[in-house]
Image 1: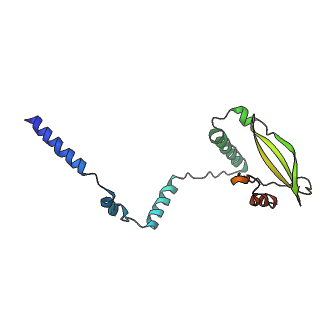
Image 2 (image 1 turned 180 degrees about the horizontal axis):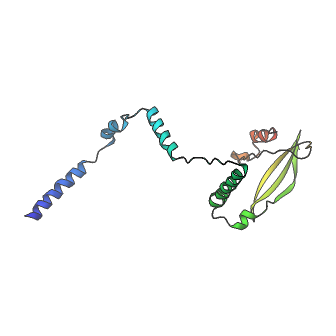
Image 3 (image 1 turned 180 degrees about the vertical axis):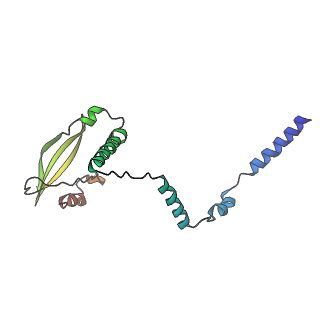
Amino acid sequence: MKSKALLALAILMSATLVRAQTDAAVSEPILTEQLQSPQVVTFQLQQFLMGKVPQLPTPSSAEQWTAQAQRIRRHLLDDIVFHGWPQEWVNSPPRFEDLGAVPGGKGYQLHRVRYEIVPGFYCTALLYTPEPLPGRAPAVLNLMGHFFERGNKMEFEQKFCINRR
């Protein structure tokens, strides 16, 4: 008798579970109803996140700040940026090679260069320098891709790199 009652209860329960499934037309009005205004949600989210932000250190001397800056730098570089990198890569000095001049234009020179990203792995680049270059000067690094069928010969790339002074 108990087994028949349990079987009937199981059948009734499975029927209600199957019936619980619905389609988008039924659930959409429920899910699109706005419970809070966007301003309230934004305020509450900002308050929650601000509670998670740790207080900034307030060193009382330049020496304390220097020590704190060194700890932060060591943590960022060792534990985050270079985490898992071989020390040979991290500590290797940069290597740059000038592969020769390329015909430039009025007011600038163009050089093909390559640099060693990690030992044994090189990346090529074009170096635009103003003409004449009066010695040391600041530089701008433009990360340009190769667009469409003309690669780095696209006119807007050339003008962008030439006019960045």
